[in-house]
Amino acid sequence: MFTGIIKDLGEVAAIEDTADRTLTIATKLPLADMEIGASIACNGICLTAIEIEGGRFKVQASAETIAKTTLGTWRPGTTINLERPLRAGDELGGHMVSGHIDGVAEILERKAEGGSARFVLRPPQELMTFIAPKGSVALDGVSLTVNDVLNDSFGINIIPHTQTCTNFGALRPGDRVNLEIDLMARYLARMIGRAPI
Image (cartoon, rainbow, N blue to C red; front, side, top):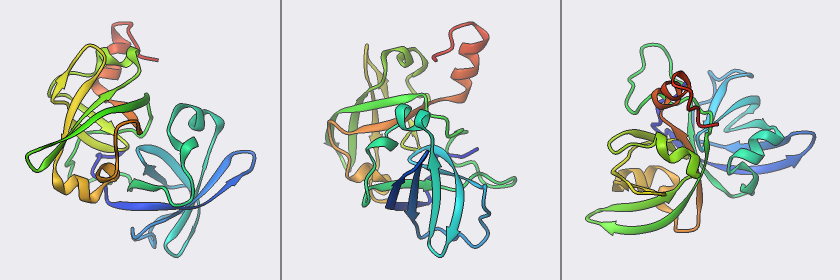
């Protein structure tokens, strides 16, 4: 479980295509207390550390993860948002994020709005019903508040701090981001028989 508060901008250092794709991620996060098998959110995707050495760790991604997320487009040098899992007693600064991606959203528009950047994104149509004004979404692992919802898109604002501390500073129209809908929306949908996927 995560909070959507990004702790580091990591970088893909190497990719190996074996039975599953193996990625080496460079980070400034303290890894001394991270164990093999630990979860870490990489652009919002909950992945498992299979090797840790110095300021790098390795994760593996299955064909399902590659098909359902942006991970298949990552290359050496790709910058990714990183978050270690929530521990009992930690501050819940964002919202409850599972690291289970529901779909990929495309950035349609980015424009300056005061000191912030206003983004408009188009998610898969079947997920639109689970996105509500003033509700929460996680985009590339970042906990964000939805400003408004249109027929096939929704808007968010990214403050200057978030632009500096996450990959949102570099994102432009045409880029795609991992989308996780709010956990409460997911479970409510399941209860009433309208699960998104």
